[in-house]
Amino acid sequence: MARKAKSRPYHHGDLREALVASATEMIEEGGPSSFTLRECARRAGVSHAAPKNHFATAEDLIAEVAARGFEHFVAALAQAADSSVDQSPDARLTAMCRAYVDFARSHRGVYGLMFRERSGFAKSEHLRTAARAAPAPRAARARTCRACA
Image (cartoon, rainbow, N blue to C red; front, side, top):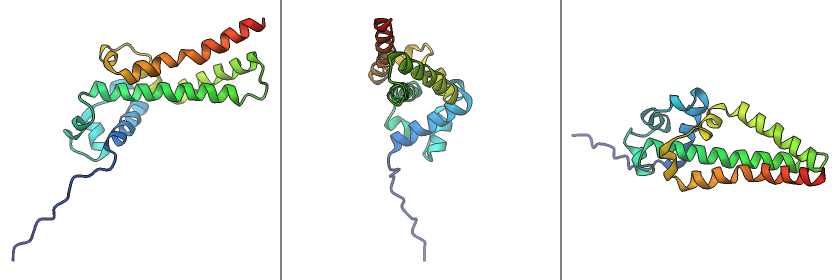
């Protein structure tokens, strides 16, 4: 009697998130230049063609990683300012400066990706919005410190 081939329906779960996580991991390990879509798909456990279901190009995927990097960066700065023991404007700004350096050191790959110039990034609305939000907390804190001086 012939064996019936086991059919395994395609269902990864949340492939988009798995791809972003794999891409982020690769970029953190070896910097932006270490990223390949094929390796990212392999790490996510899918075929090399599967990412096309969520990202038209590799550039679109790394733009998403950069956008999320900006969001985490802004959140880290805000959290540092809000948790500063001394809530004076100068102390809050100092806490944000430390958080800035800590973020850059602990997320070297993504940090490098966030601030590099890439023409392909221009089409990512998510990245443009996240990048524009990044300077806002620092600028507001700096204006507050100058107002107190």
